[in-house]
Amino acid sequence: MQTSPRKIRLGSEEHKQVFCRFFLDTHDPYRPEDIAWPELNDEELERLRGLPVWNQAVKTETYTALKVQTLGRLEPDPLLGEAVRLQGFEEGRHADILRRMTDHYGIDVEPFEPLPPPADPTWAFMRTGYGECMDSFFAFGLFEIGRTSDFFPRSLIDIFDPVMQEEARHILFLVNWAAFLRVRTPLLFKPVFDARRGWCILSQAVEHARLALDTKPSSQQAFTMKSKSAFGDFSLRTFFELCLTENSRRLAPYDSRLRRPKLVPTTIRTVLRFLPRHSASA
Image 1 (cartoon, rainbow, N blue to C red):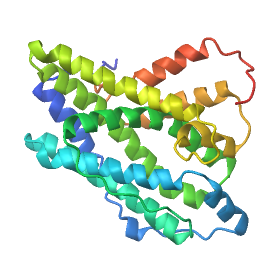
Image 2 (cartoon, rainbow, N blue to C red):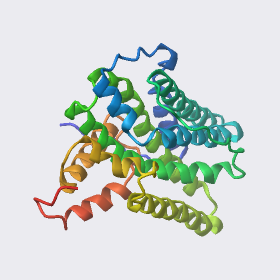
Image 3 (cartoon, one colour):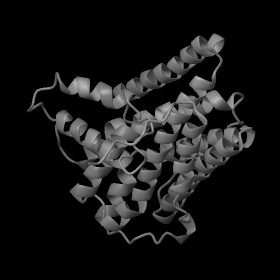
């Protein structure tokens, strides 16, 4: 008879060891310069260039890398610092992959101003990380639709699958890092910590809702909420159910004792209770 793994006490030294070691040990050391970009026919190239996301995607990954790398340089705990620096490296690698892809396929990316390092790296990482939790949940579903719809050739999809899996690792690390920090915060300051973390989550939720409702044709920021229209016609229920399935699948390989992101999956499960089984196409 198989027994459930022993639970980890959040905030303990064991918890830190497990969520940091999981992250470090599952790193994939691929190199962007080794990627062999597939040849695309005219129709595939038009589809790729037509997605209104590349400016924002490159800028977001570049800014995210800066925030994470800044925290990694300043983190005094050796193990936490090593893990955060690795995530910063991976975020920078995502930006590098996007730059190489857009260069290779002749996709114009507008120049953007560099940002200074964040003044408060811990909370910049917190806010960005919760934004990634929201983005990744929907991106997992979109990516699977892109894969099964043959919207792009499988060879191109395969290049970005490791990137999607890294996003799953990033959000898993984030929620455990945040839980660890909360437990380690002195009791007197826990209300302040909870208020600031709550504001990080709320501000990201409001921003994502605003972008999802932004109907301006020039808007390139609502990628995970809007670009699903490019992959065909499917119902909102179908999309949400697929996101839940893919979110669980992406996180399944990792230690089951680690805390999982709950806010978006729980919210979507609640929404599904009120959506008809044959809801209108989104």
